[in-house]
Structures are given as structure tokens and as C-alpha cells.
Image (tube, rainbow, N blue to C red):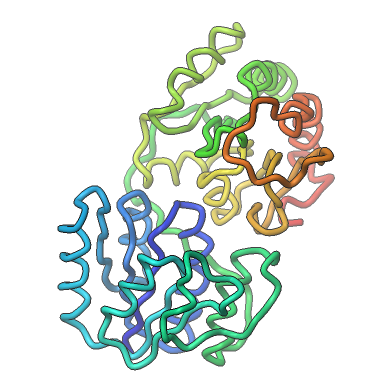
Length: 327
């Protein structure tokens, strides 16, 4: 049986889709092909349950779309799953030579993608965690429920040179409204180093380098800056070996969760029950406007309300075992 998964999107969305691929491989022994965008390609390409990746690079414009369609037409699939639920993914699903094409029910589709003549999964709670919503496709295919597994691909190569005991502060976030203040990260770095004897390690993308410099300038605490310096496979190893990860709502947060690393997630404008870590500790201080799901905000009171002391208390409790990081 050949199954095509269409999930182009952000790193966190792709990570939350991995349990579906694991279940399809385990219960159907399916040959799984995955249509994915460049950012998440390294993780998908290296996943043991994925037999083939098809890369869609939107920067190529119409040429990129044509290349994908040509590639899709070379294979006959038994099932195609449109997990992206947008117009573009619906078009790719239509182009695939597939006996069954399955998508979300109308209420959960975006960009009028419900108009495509696909088989639809049953209506369900749109506010449920997205990982569980993706697993509904397995239920639709009569797969038995079981323990959630991500099976994140790990590198066999020696990791980056980092101290034996360190804590990751993942300072980036795609949406500016999801970011925590630089001064708060700096203060937390001081507390972690002084009270827990852990070396703070900053992670993030190239776009976070300026914030990393600002954080280091705000403290005399020795900090290792890895922002913009890791590939996705290298980031996996950095997060996997950390004593704990502190992160805002972004892809590495979900990656830390999938790896089983102790995690403290900082949430403001979005709903952690739907897009938060599947396992891990969430700190959120709801305001009158929460959740607004805004991309940017001139006065992000929901994030500024979270103090370094709030975060430090959760980190300490996690490391002492007073709270379970899988709660």
C-alpha cells in the first residue's frame, strides 16, 4: 500500500504529524511518501517511516508547482492525506493519482479547500490539540489507537561541542507576539547559571542573532550563543541532550517535546490546549484579550506578565522531579 502525506508547513506542524506516519507504517506497513517544504525537509527525509520525500519549494513559483505535479503524477497511490487543508495542498491532492483522497471536514478546512471532492473525516472538536486532530485520520482508516510516538531521526555523528550540563533558551518565534523579552531571558540565564549550575545555551534562527547579542550584553553570565548556527539535525541533538528547554510557541518547542526533553513552554496570545506542546509544562498568564492569536502586538501584556521567577520555579521543580514533564 502506498500513501501520500501532504503536510508542507512549519516545523511544529510537521512534528505533530509524525505520529500519524508512525501509525500508518506500524499498522498498514505502508510505503509512505511525503510532500514537504524545505524548512522541515531534513527531518522528514531522515524519518524511518518515510520512504520518499517530495520537495515543494514555493520560492520557485509556478515552476515549483509544476515540478511537484509532474512528480506526483509518476506514482499511483492508494491513499492521499491532505493534512495541510489549504487551497495549495488541495490542488496537489487533486493532482495526485490516488484511489482515495482524504481531507478534514468542512468546518476545519481553510481557504475554501472544503470544496475539493475529497473523502472527509468526521467532524470533531476544532479546539483539540492538533496532534490529536491529525491522528483522527488514522481513526478514519480504522487504525487502532495506541501510544503516541514521534520517532524523531537522530544523528549518529558526534554532536556539537557543548558543556556536559546545559539548559537551552530558545529565544525565537515566528510570530513577534509570541516572543519573550530579551531582559527576561538574560535574567533567567543568570538564575539558571547561579542557582542550578547549568550553562545557558541560546538557540534560534539567523533572524534571532541580534536578540542573542542583546541578551548577552544584558548580563555577565557566560552564555553560549548557537542562534543561526545549527542545521535542523544539529538542533535535534542540542535539544535532545539539554537538561531542560525553555521556549516560546515555535517549532523547536514541539521538537523538544517529541524528543522527550524536559520542557517549559511560554505562551501568550495562542491556545496551548490546541497548539502547545503535547507534553511539557506550559506557563500562561491569560489576560482579558487572551487568546487573540495575533501575529504582532504593540503591548504584549500576556508575555510580559511571565516573569523569570515564574520560569525558574518550573525549571527547578522539573529538575527535582517535583512535577512530571509529561503532564
